[in-house]
Structure formats: structure tokens, C-alpha cells
Length: 351
Image (cartoon, one colour):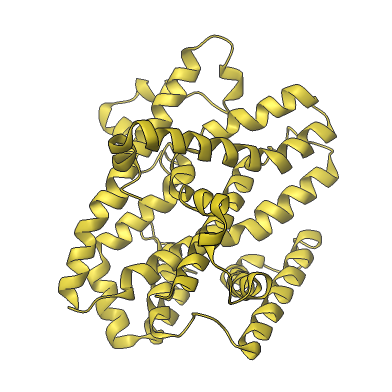
């Protein structure tokens, strides 16, 4: 992998995590009832553009996982062992942090109003149900730390990666096509949607994706244009067709477009090493992902308290809270890594 591609993956990951923050910064329908502009902006940024973020994370994860396997299956087993430290341990810590932080906020006087819901009823359930809710599924398709569903599915995919390695090795793009078809079937506990993006990333290791030529860049920008047009049509005409049928093709256009737009905006001579603060921010993408809930919720609600529960207050909170939180999280991450380096290393899997 060239340094240009490495920088590109890191910056696109940072942009993606900001979009994830936008997804989780949106206000519920009852909070912005009657605020049409707010609703449209949230739906376009979070519901249209933001939906490319997690698939891109899966593509990058699959690409990096299958990028170098010089010893075949032996290399796959080695990567699986490494992912225990880089995925499983941070996942467990992230799940416990969410629950612990939620309980703390529930018992502290005057702060529970900054939480969307209380976790206290969870502890009235049998121990098996408590553990299942915290670490796997809280009966909503995600663990209590709902943002970690991505990491949960990634762990399951990595745990079964020898099978996906063999399928990609022998079936190549045919297997990617098969998984794409399977995404239209709802099979409990089988994350076909996540798997599709992961194996797509794995298959892309066979394609030269370093820096597109003029022709490939034009195709990518055209893909971005189509993505925006389709998103706008869906925004204003949500019932014109069954948009779920175009879910993956639309997101794929967005990812291709973002990939090409990066080359146009930054150019082939861009180097992350020459941009100190951007480079620092890119180091904390995984840290932000792990711990942005329920802490982000406090930031966005505090802004509304200051600006008022009106159209301007909700809009301002939605637009700026991801950036304020990113700044605060990077600062907190710097302090955490400086003063408790070993603890930070364990929490983030050495990232």
C-alpha cells in the first residue's frame, strides 16, 4: 500500500466518523415536529449522505483484512488472532462504558434529562438477558451501545473469515454478487448486508485503486452526481418507488463518488504528514467511534438548552454538535493517551 492510499483511507475514515456523528445527532420527530426545514436537512445529511459511512468502514476493513495474505489460510488465522485485541477487547470495553456511563447519568441528580432513555430497567431482568442486551442484542437489532452494532457484526464476520477467504479465492466477483443478492433476504443473526461490504473490500485488493486516472475520476464524479440526484429525489418523493431496492446501489455510487472527489480536491501530491492537526484528528477515529454514545447526546442537548427549544436551536445543535464533539473527543483522547497510555492502548486495541 502506498502512503497516498494510506492517507486516503485515514482521511475518508475521519470524514465517515463525522457523518456517523451526524446520524446520531439528529432529533426525534416529536422534538422537531412541524419544523420542516430541520427535518429535511437531517434526512438529507444523516439519512442520505450519512448512510455511506458505515458501509465504507466495512469496505476499508475488508480491504485491509485481505490485503496481505502471503501464506493463505495461515495468514488469515494470524489476522483473526490479532483482531481479538483490536476488535473484541475494545468492543467489550465500549459496551461496558455505555452501560456504566448511562447508569451514572441516571443516578446523578439533574443530569438524567440529557439522556434519551434510562438503562435502569435493564437490571431487573435475568442475568442472561442482561448480558445478551449489553453484548449482543437489546431486542432492537443492536446491543445497548447501539452504535457498536457495526463492530459486533465485524467480529462475527472476522470469526468466520476463513470461509469468506475461500469463497473469494475461488469465486471472486461471483461471490460478491451472490452476497449482494442475499442482502435482500432477512435471515436472523446473519449480517448479509455487513458481509457484502466486507467481501467487496476484500475483492478490491485485486484491483488497482491507488489513484484513478482522468477517465476513472470522471466516472467517480459522475457517480457522485447520480448519488446526489437519487438522494434528492428520494428526499422529496419517498413513496414514488420502493427505495430499499436501491439501497446498496445508491450507497455504492456515493462511495465511488467520495473516492474520486478526494483525488480531485486533494490531488496526487497531498501528504497527511504536512497537515499536523488533521493527522492528529485521524489518529482518534476509532476512539471517537467507541465512546461517542451516550456522550454526544449530552453535547447536542446542552446546545439546545443554551439556544432554546426552537427551530434555530435544534438546527444549530444538529449542525455543530458533531464538530464540537470531535474537537472535545480528540482533546480527551490526547490526554488519555498521554497520561494513561497502557489503558488507552487496551481500550482502542492499539490503534
